Length: 183
Image (cartoon, rainbow, N blue to C red; front, top):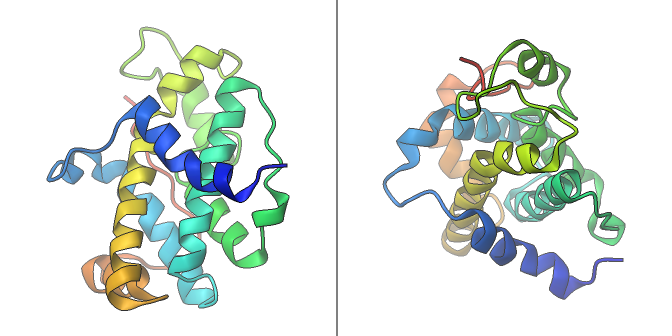
């Protein structure tokens, strides 16, 4: 069972392993960030209790999900899960994870990953590690924004900011996925 220390430590571990989006470099990652943030905003609109605090937890849960996939380890995060953060966890995963989103899986099976010479082998842990690099650094960037907005504006701070910043562009309820891996 993952304890509180381990749960909170996942951010720094993943930052050390994968790095971060350079400040001011968010535009280079827009194709990944936009679906993640848009999906999370859709959930928050429908379920306001899935707020910025739950988003912070959801990011940690997603990081553990990713780590399980590329290491084969298993992490029991059940003591940190609740309806509010699980909704956001799934929304984030729907943006990029082939094990969560069938459309993403199908796109990967059809297309080659530009950074790799062949198509992605979802059973190869090294390839999965590389595949998850961009999503992880984007999640860590979102985490920084969530922390900043929580501190400045409280439990809805992040979603209030996202609503102002991109809210008009986010429509419907279906989850979007990024196509950073498609040619």
